[in-house]
Length: 549
Image (tube, rainbow, N blue to C red):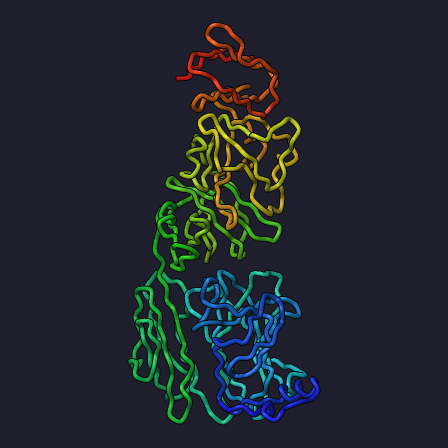
């Protein structure tokens, strides 16, 4: 590549002169920019001029390496990430190219985003005005390979290009751009190979035909994932694809420049009959980009939306529970507690060693009005029941004082009769669009709780439990709706009394000597150090005998 510049003769001068000289810089040969050697990084929404090997570009996007951000789509070291935000949605050349034949580049949806839209635009007056070169392109959800944009321009004079993202109402429509190429005006490029079967997920054998719009073109292809070249096999008859296969192909024609490589990924999902199998598919970190199809039947136990429009769907079958994280807005329609669902394709994402499902398609509702009987567990068993509906009896809220009330997404310390301390908290999910009906109600000292177990926060590593409604904060157990007024437990030689009411509590030795006698504060534990022996604990519910060994 050759560059025309007057930087070498510029010793002193006004800043305006420097700007004008850069704006008239021209690239006179075929241009290829892989964005792998940036002079700076564009951070989210902050426009910046970045010098690459091809020249200066202006970006409001984010240039990212392959690690640690596994959601970026990259060929090589870096790519540009863009999003459709008003006045911050362009990537453009700050230099002219002397003539252009075909403009092409790779693109793909960042992470699990989809629905981003862009146009290619050109300027023939050094960026003063821009006109559309292509129609609007909508970027699908990532399916394992970057797509190739290719547009014949045939502009003989100086020209520069920009990618313009169409503004959307969904912030999760980010798109990665890489390997930008402009051929010369007087050099014809062989048309990109086209596949009769597009990149996607399939469950039956696919017969794939390859073609090029250039008459007489020869197509070379590979099926083993290696780049296609003129030494690769020549395509002659349709390909029968029966397993996940990456088809890479180029088209070659006499007297024309070789086409860009086209990559088509035909994916076949791995069928999973039960939800517990998703737990075995966790990557060490991040997302397992293998497609899995759940063909069992699970019952929805909870569904909620956040204030930003994202949705979460809890479900469980006989083997495990799982959560669908619809942060990228793939769910269509409403799902209700009791819906039985099946038939969805998904990736598995690892959040704090806990699986979340990223959907590719909508679950099918088999029936409605189904019920799940919560399993009765203790707090110590919470980690074994992730995303499942459970019942925990005699659960204590340590912060209950008779006046403190529940607030949205606030953590509350809890324990039960068998677990004095635990990292599990009672808290509601973050950023819910509508709050639970028990928010602003007084925190009870002790309850029988029906609720969901969750571990779905990237920033909170501990498990949480939450009730879906006020009625689940005090459920009936064996015909008795109200738990005991006082609970006591022994660890070592410490007797801990957990009062759920203001009824008097008394502790005596076996000889009748009073050790403790008081009217307790609801929810405030009392710890009493005892010597070895037998003691009597008297409450409004009767007298109990305890032994300190």
